[in-house]
Image 1 (spheres, rainbow, N blue to C red):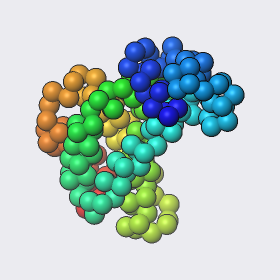
Image 2 (cartoon, rainbow, N blue to C red):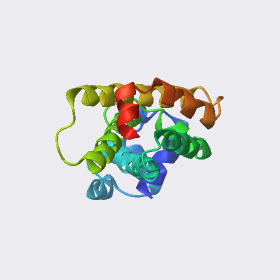
Image 3 (cartoon, rainbow, N blue to C red):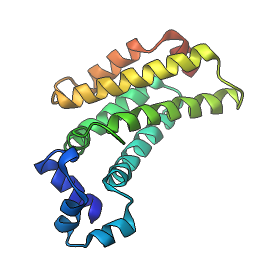
Image 4 (tube, helix red, strand yellow):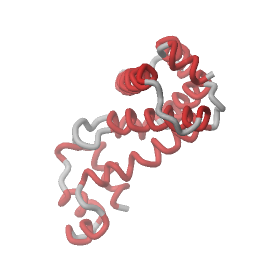
Length: 173
């Protein structure tokens, strides 16, 4: 109920302007009850993002290294749930969706490559390629959502795949 109230409030005003009192009032609880469940409004944000990032990561892992297919499914997930994603990207700052995208993408690449090649350390060039790709992918995803998702998920996925550094694409194959 708390998270749902937070999401509803985020449709009315910016996340930065939402207070714990606003959230508590919206769901008919006391501030003390709110703090029994969450540390602060940022932990509500984290609670909301976690399932989305987890689902996107699972989609990627389920594609068996076909990064183009993983990108397509991830963009389709966002497109099919655009109301939710439009709401969560409205907040910038601590625990922003962008932070979670970067973190989730990085975890996906590291987890996949570790499963594929073993637990050894990744080559530094590959780590740089992962970081570069994760930041670029998060920025592109958020820009696409902010601009109303005018391009198809297929187009965005294809173009994002082309932008991946060669070392990362080859490592994923």
